[in-house]
Image (cartoon, rainbow, N blue to C red; front, side, top):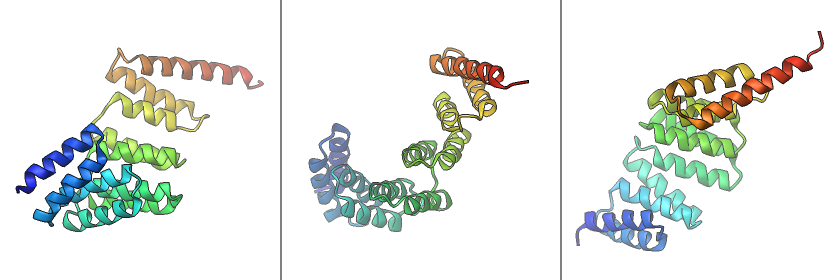
Length: 193
């Protein structure tokens, strides 16, 4: 009857995609250790995936109460809000994550992806920029370039050039840069003198 063992089984079940088993194991862990924020956070994610949105919200709130520095519960709540078409509330949760949590690059990337799906391109760009500043990857630069307005060729080009500089072998970065160069060429040809 060790909560660490049940928690470990719960995490393993989440990783294997067996969410009902994960919830069951995490329930057992929480019976033995009701003040463990990690167990609430993991159960919130499993509940989110199984579409138990109310349960996910409840668990994520408890996880934040127990550990306000964890970014994951904010992401869970923002995802639930987005699923319920409450985009303003989702954005507020993500802003709260920035203010309260010790967010890692992974959390910034997840927030950026959620915001992009919600159509919040500028806000998504801000989050992916934070991810890049925390832990630079070519993927961050590619995502930021993709989130630029169609006519913002100069900044798209700068992002893609930085991606190529970071990883000269990145096929996606080189193809994106070639595409921007092609678009810039055609836009110059289309402007009457």
